[in-house]
Image (cartoon, rainbow, N blue to C red; front, side):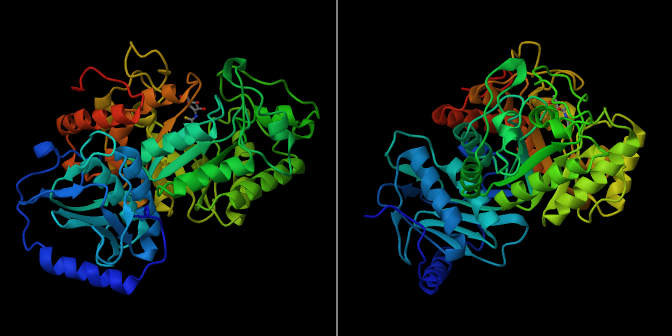
Amino acid sequence: MTRWRAAAGSTAGLVGAVLALGACTSPADPTPSATPGAAGLSVVPRPVELTTRDGEPFALDSVTTLAADPALAEPAAALAELLHDDTGIDLADGADDADIRLTMDPEVTGTDGYRLHVDHDGIEIAAAEPGGAFAAVQTLRQLVPLGDAGAAREVPAVEVRDHARFAYRGAMLDVARHFFGVEDVQRYIDDVALLKVNHLHLHLTDDQGWRIAIGSWPRLTEVGAANSVNGEAGGFYTQDDYRAIVAHAAARGVTIVPEIDMPGHTNAALTSYAELNPDGERVPAYSGIEVGFSTLDIDSEITYRFVADVLREVAALTPGPYLHIGGDESRATTEEEYATFVTRAAQIAAGTGKTVVGWHEIVDAGALPAGTVAQYWSYVVPETSALADRMRTFVDGGGHLIMSPADAAYLDMKYDAETPLGLQWARGFTDLAEAYAWDPAAILGVGDDGLLGVEAPLWSETLLTIEDVESMAFPRLAAIAEIAWTPQADRDLDDLKARLTVLGQRWDAAGVAYTKVPYVDWG
Ligand code: TNX
């Protein structure tokens, strides 16, 4: 028996097999005997529709076979790899009559929509796009009971019809204040992908460190990568390292969004190259956690050559559509300087063919390239009504927003007074209830059409290890991911808590260092 691998199969035969399956099992009306959370079925984020069916479960075991439409080879490979990691079971390469089949079905609708059907005879995942099939893979994983490695599992008979509220479901990791190596980032990608988070934003540069090798400006990492907050060890990604992260993410349906933060947050660049400074002198490395003091030289043409070189190389390494140019907390520039810089940097970024993303301050810069995305990081109740007005004007002009309200979605805020790590500047502590109790559309009164999605940033001033990262992210990222996926009307905190009881067992099995907040029953 060969372990399943993505191979160009016979589509015609596969489709025939699936139609046959449809003919014998397609349910006129599955018994609506349960809803998500009931009967031990526990999926996070909560699916739009999950119905348990009468009938025997599917027995997943060492002879289970897998086949996929060639267009869904990547999600199928992800399923084989993840099920192996979860259960120790290797799916065998199936032919047209495989037990688990991934099929393309253009009639499956909705953002990252999928249909998942499980009965005694097999499992069928149908999607119109790979994104839907990747999402289905994560749902299926959460339906497979935990057990001993290699032991058979009974997957309950269900019918799931599901799709996302938002196309962009994001997490951000700050690898600049403290550096996290390739394996740590890959582990975080695995962690977030389980929750159908499909974008990982990497904050690659800041005052304390520059973390991505740039061939045309080598001192950025030869010099600018050595440092971290508190002078702790630095580090950086070679371009091959970055490609390895991108590939690992892509294999799980996750798009990497690289950020080069400018014109502020640039001390690491300014310490690497004398010519980026107005007086031609390198500045010292910075190990504190203040923000807003550094800036590129807005009036120097060398600055824009630097910006163009860096963005060109980062864009070339990045298959995803987005390029994030930062733009936050630029307090060492005048408004006019800021507008001059951001307008030019955004044009340069757009010239790489990417969609430009920036922190929400960029909406003040004036004309931005069509399609530019602003990342809102004020509060659930906006800091000022003037800011809210400017954000709405940006959306009225065709811009889109990623919502990251700092008092709810910033995973580096402490849960409560007992939390050993993290900060508390964003209106104090953020417990699970606060992380969950907001509607992205309600913050600015912008409808879902004006929102690209939701992202949970994790800044790393106080975080040194991947366990530190996980302890801040989980369980709160489960709440944010559900905000990004599940219809607002279907969300309920008590229901989420009940499902976290089960998810916590999965995190335990996978060795995820989540925080056992006292208001969830962790079993
Ligand atoms: C604000 S929010 C920042 C970061 C800090 C973070 C700490 C934003 C766009 N910038 O520079 O790391 O607060 O929570």
